[in-house]
Amino acid sequence: MAEEKVTVEQLPSGKWACFLHLAGHDEPINLGREFKSDEQAENWLNVSESVTAIEMMIRKHKK
Image 1 (spheres, rainbow, N blue to C red):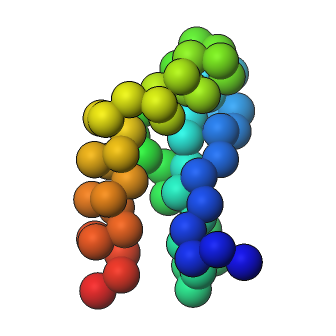
Image 2 (cartoon, rainbow, N blue to C red; image 1 turned 30 degrees about the vertical axis):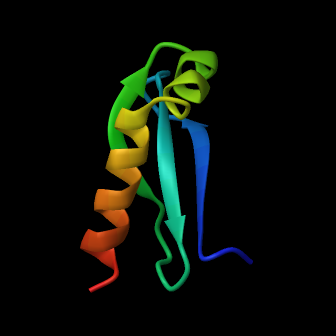
């Protein structure tokens, strides 16, 4: 398995969010943004803001 993976999942509120899955962590890490549709969440993964959020979470949780 890759060391990290990002998925788009629906929240209980009905909105969508991106989650980072790290090896050694049981729970996925919410990247902090919510979207009205899964398509919007997928599109966010193609912008530099998402890359920055992912890199920050990896550094934060790999201490």
